[in-house]
Amino acid sequence: MQKTRLGISVGIFGAAIYLAALVGGYIPLILLAGYVLLFEENPWLKRSAVKAAVIMFSFSLLIALIGFIPDIIAFLNSLFVVFHGKLTVPVLTNIVNFVNIALSILEKVILIVLAIKALTQGELHIGFFDKLIGKHTD
Image 1 (tube, helix red, strand yellow):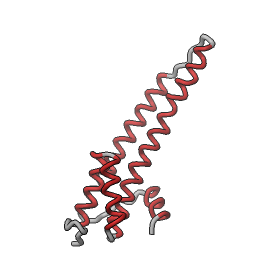
Image 2: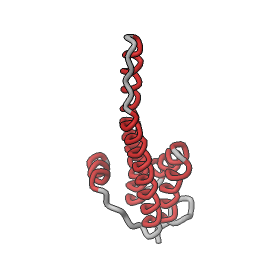
Image 3: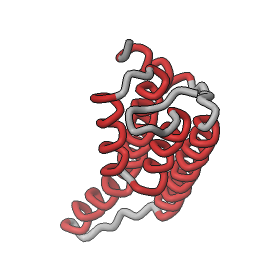
């Protein structure tokens, strides 16, 4: 079993990175991933740190982009109000809320599965994320 410079196993540290992304948010993830990328040598651990960050940033970006839809409708509605009109699409807002909640649940499930697999230094292969990480890392 390989150990990190801190003296804990690589698998436990990988699981900690995924769990930090899940419950802690960006700051703990960036601190742990930054430490791994700067000071650790294990390629699996480095890939796991990058994967956790990419997953978290990707889901946040996707949720933010989908969240623009109600914002655009609200902007158009404010424009229509100037001319004494009204534009509302409540069903679209409900669909966007549903999609955002579904994406949030999917992100949490992926991070939990990755944390469990990390205990044995296993991986969950997710095509888009693995291709992106493989393309930009060694």
